[in-house]
Amino acid sequence: MKIEEIQKNNNNKEFILQVVKESGKNLEFASEELQDDKEVVMEALKQDGEALEFASTRLKGDKEVLQLATRTAPWTICYASEELAGDKEIMLECCKQYGQALYYASEELRDDKEVVKAAVENKGIIIKYASKRLIDDKELAEIAVKQNKQAYHFISNKLKQDEDIKKIME
Image: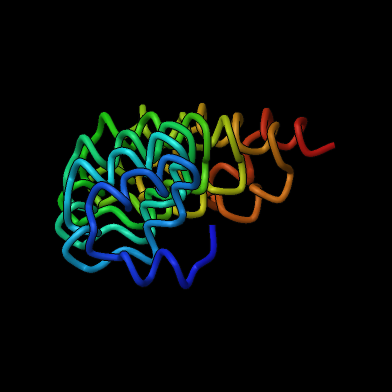
């Protein structure tokens, strides 16, 4: 379907529902009103989680919407509202699949060992976004350095002197 046709019908809900079922990213061409319509956005996300980019700010703050998007496109956590960036359930699931999600986590969750561990197991170097307390956690440092030796640069100075960490680096 041509973009021009979608744009001509951008406020026709039934038409937009049909085109987002074909390609979720067609949500980009929907009217602002339909980008703020939960039914339309959910249909787009069922087809392509990346369509979250085109949802309204209000719906990016809706837990159900964000969970659907991040299930297939965990990087879309970057669109989360401040409130949802602090939602442990969502952030934990994203970090398991996409360690970089820790970058978008609230300060509180960057200090949550379970969340940080999930992120570091997926992408060791992401330990650099953990709290000061957790970059000094030996278990996390070992996981991070085993996963990516570059993570060594982001652990605490104390742990850089640890014999077990030094062995991993050999």
